[in-house]
Image 1: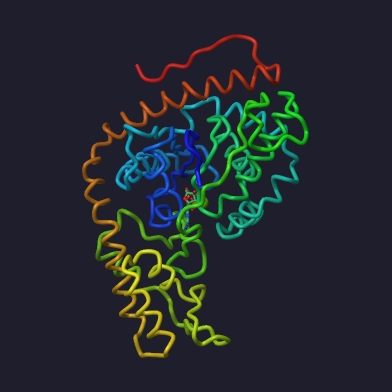
Image 2: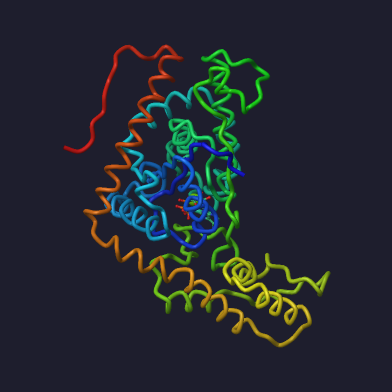
Length: 359
Ligand code: ATP
Ligand code: MG
């Protein structure tokens, strides 16, 4: 649980529209947290260059799309700042500094990084910037001196790296004692709080391929922009050829073998409907996946309907750009302060500076 008065930072890479995995893993939490906490939601446009450096126009238009989708899902720009990574130079400057404090092998050991290289089929052809993005993510979080980070499960290893580099910085440059508990780093003079992951209702929603995490860039996602018909079609195509019942325990449905059950439990709100399906399935009733698929598709469409409506209200790119400008200004106000503190601590600051965005 997130303690009162904590600062929140999280974000998305502009690699496509938001999907229902984002909602359950992180965005739903953002919408809850924005009422009580200072919230910053980042659009990691530089990190999108890890896989899309050849298509900067698509990254740019996805920045607008992600901001629009977030607001459609319920993020309120009057409560939370939505901003662009590349409009906040302090983040990039701290990335460089943190890269000096993390052993190369430690960065490469990150299991999420390894997994991404594998599922995105990058083999040995990934850029130097690909592993560097994990260091950049430490800076995304720490430049905001964030206390909590609402993320899906895949981001937890990144958070661990962030916590390590924050501890190292505070000990090396701020005199925080070696054995100081994480919660005391700030009060002991450390520039950075040691942030915690705040994993959403479902930490890892499976994609419609039934194998990988639902991801924008894997073509296995149900997006907020999908029409009701498309949602039905995508759900209808989910492969459920394997028997969903666990052969070692016929009474139990094994959701790992059938994403439909994860969707059922996640999106169908009526518990008695879920229980009924589970019971009939486990008893070997000829319920058929078709019926479950209908239930799931309807439930997802019910969730998406109000989001689709709100999305219409943000149809103007100019309106979205105004939100991003305002959010980026707010982000800079805080991040320049952090950068000053960090540069003072590391003896890197020589002159004052100010950053002004927009005209
Ligand atoms: P990409 O394919 O470009 O990596 P993505 O779909 O993984 O895109 P990100 O922008 O990397 O989306 O992630 C944004 C946030 O949403 C992160 O906190 C991530 O953990 C969360 N998230 C993404 N996909 C899922 C999922 N399938 N289940 C739960 N949380 C998710
Ligand atoms: Mg991802």
